[in-house]
Length: 388
Image (cartoon, rainbow, N blue to C red; front, side, top):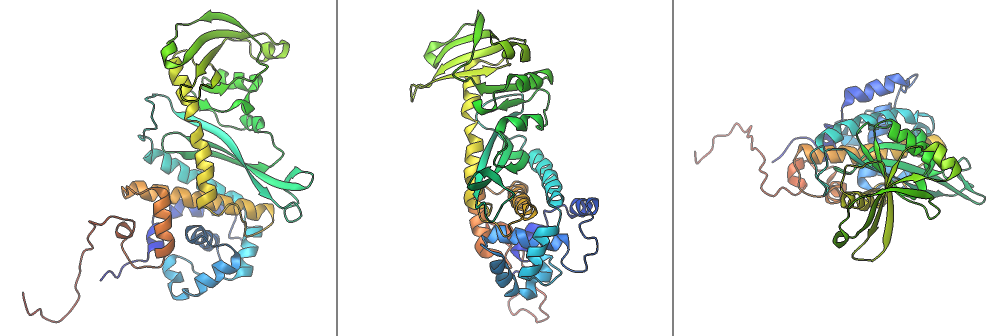
């Protein structure tokens, strides 16, 4: 019989606790805290994510029913609804944001060799945002419309492994294009985004930093053709041109040439016009890159369905950001665990299995679907065996 750690404890082993304590010390998260440390807060909220708890009372009832196992889970304090509510309100959300950034670095190293359908030497990113609706009377700080509140989750994902590399949480009023001002740019990388991010002054800044972008042209795009490249119409490429901007302000903001690729989708017969500053990649690869931008939309859909980020345990801005960053950290933790243990099951399957086995004393590899995994049997019996 397996007498080792419970499932939750085995998951927590993949947390870099030294880094977590460094993040806590940076923002003095445990200053004047006698009980219920930042680690206790993180573990309770991670438990809520893994088991799909809907409220603070739900978390309290479930953990108190297993109070003999809390110490083995790493939780050193008694869990109460008021303590959790206060921690969500006053613990600095930047602690969990910095910790999530460290988990992102670990996950990206593990997924660096993942394939996403295109053979590229460059790192490809997809940038987009999603809106989470909130009640304005309960979340008065989340400005969006006159009678509606919301927050925006601006996310940049690495198309290799669909790992989020940049996340910015804002109120609903922040326009998507403003995120380009704070987006970290890596030279040589390709940034794929929709036409909501078309701002030629900002796109020129990306080009000046030796990075590439792929986006769609707006309807009122004013340009003049400089040169036409050879195209393969059988592949759906209508034209591949080098152009310059002719608008008064646009030409000042972006004085260099752009590449304009016109593509017809063979399935829907819809025509798309792409803009990029990459003149090396084939035109069809440019079109395919934009098609893979939908991976970020699927990522948003996935986290809304599988993480608790649509219903919040607190109404303050700090509480909302704490919950979102801990949810992202939990997602990254499971992704790291999946890669380290070489689990073939999807993240969705792993989360569903963990949610109903979180307190079981079973080897982690056995519970997530590895049927051929065998537990080492260690017998401490002092009785002699009859059949040696």
